[in-house]
View (spheres, rainbow, N blue to C red):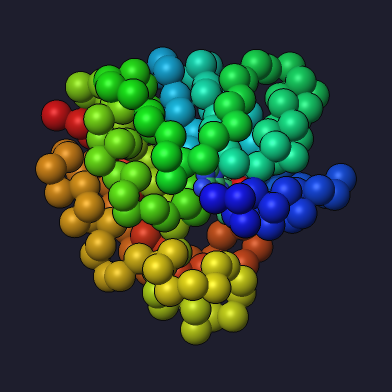
Length: 191
Ligand SMILES: C[S@@+](CC[C@H](N)C(=O)[O-])C[C@H]1O[C@@H](n2cnc3c(N)ncnc32)[C@H](O)[C@@H]1O
């Protein structure tokens, strides 16, 4: 959507990394559980997770609607001496393809209609790693999206991947990356 693009380009326009350079803590902690190979980082933003995956030996495709975010991600990858492939796409329309990826990472981008495409895009035995806010997060006053549709209901993420093998799931309030957040985090395998 054009309005998303404008909003995120504005957010990512400055020199500072709005979402930080450090990878998501859940991704960092569980990197050893993830199958090496071809990875897709959904809504990759400024590239903190895409670059971390590339540093850990993955061949990374990073997709996002923000050109500013993708440019920053490319520059960040160069600084770190790794390569990532970036694609400017609108994930409300973008077809991920069939059985292309060993790993699909989705951090803080909840579009329920995208879930079937994530499942289709994974190879058999491929894994998804997903983390985003729970509705409960709104009470904490520590940032996050405005619209209720972008928050998970209790156990919703687990239900969305109920046809996958669940390797790890957690739900609750955690203090990570310097702030309190109410999130659900999942690692699941396509069988
Ligand atoms: C909260 S940020 C998360 C970024 C990244 N996953 C991370 O954790 O650092 C949400 C991202 O979704 C992207 N985005 C929003 N709408 C999009 C759309 N329709 N298609 C693709 N990306 C979109 C934004 O540009 C932004 O980078």
